Image (cartoon, rainbow, N blue to C red; front, side, top):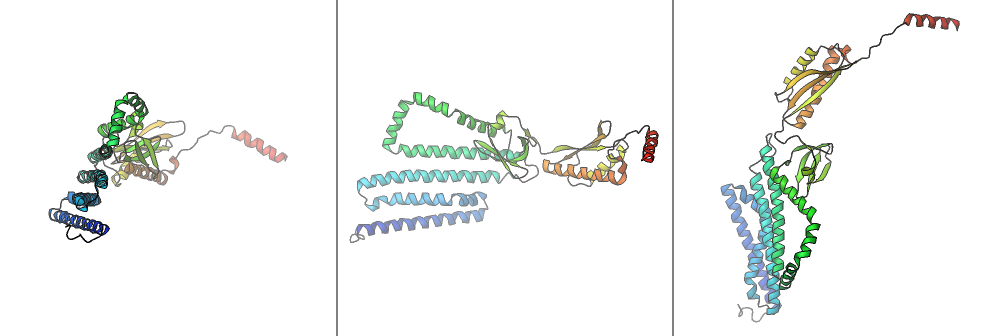
Amino acid sequence: MNGIFMDWPRWAVFTAMLGAVLLISIAADFLLIKVIKRIARQTGMFFFESFIRHCRKSLRLVILLIIFSTALPLFSIPLPFNASIERFMSSFFIIAVAWLLIKITFVLEDLILNRYKTDSEDNLHARKIYTQVQFLKKAAIIVMGIVASGTILMTFESFRRLGTSILASAGIAGIVIGLAAQRYIGTLLAGLQIAITQPIRIDDVVLVEKEYGRIEEITLTYVVVRIWDLRRLVLPITYFTETPFQNWTRITADMMGTVFLYVDYTVPVQEVREELNRILKNSPNWDHNVSGLLVTNATEHTMELRALVSASDSPTLWNLRCEVREKLIEFIRENYPDSFPKVRAELLGMGNKKDAFSESEMDE
């Protein structure tokens, strides 16, 4: 090797060897990715497809650093610079490996979620798994970032001595940091509690702060609720461990709802009840579980009818309630138009008033 580059300038030798390292790295990355793609085509395994999609860039960087570290002695770099370059390469390699491990968590997430589809009708178990995987992935990314940062600092002697000094005087500092981080640690513990006990899950239908929506995202510190009109309500994760709220899909997505009608006493309740049954039988929104119509209240002017219906989930129930309300009103209007609410009054002494009115007109 020295004989080949003996007459070359130092910068030309360095450039040529650096170019060779880059070419070897590109070739190794190309061959490795090609082998993985071929295995993916032959086996049909989802793992390899996800691995290529998420890890290709980070894997390419790891390969480059391995080849460059292996070829570093061939560059004949002076000793002081060589030590600095090796320390820099070690730190950069730790970052690359941490990046690759973080991307592998995305691959594991894809593998798990590929088995559990949340777009099906009965997706309760899938949403449980999805919520846990999301939380564990975020926690793993934070842990790997902290470990990588600590490992990089430990490669520098000055930081190692600084760490020892800090640990020696960590009594008061630990108390101060603990008090300052108390709320943040409580938030993380609340996130861990939600991931384990799961009072909420991804895609749960909830009623919070008098707003109806679905759980769109659960992070370590906050929860995003997608409201029905596409607004986003962002709440701290501790809200769901400290504040009462309604979860409409905690056990199952099936729901019951009511439709109230206020009509006159002359309406035939039995015929309205039969019409409700006809509406439900012809409606694709009804789940064939619950139906009924009862007189639930009576005032001096109106009678209250309550129709009880059920559907497979809350959006379908909303459509069903609107459909039932509209068609029952149409049925009463077409068949019993006099049965809508009216005010009755008895007029007394009308004849005397009429005579008095007539006399006053005659005087005029």
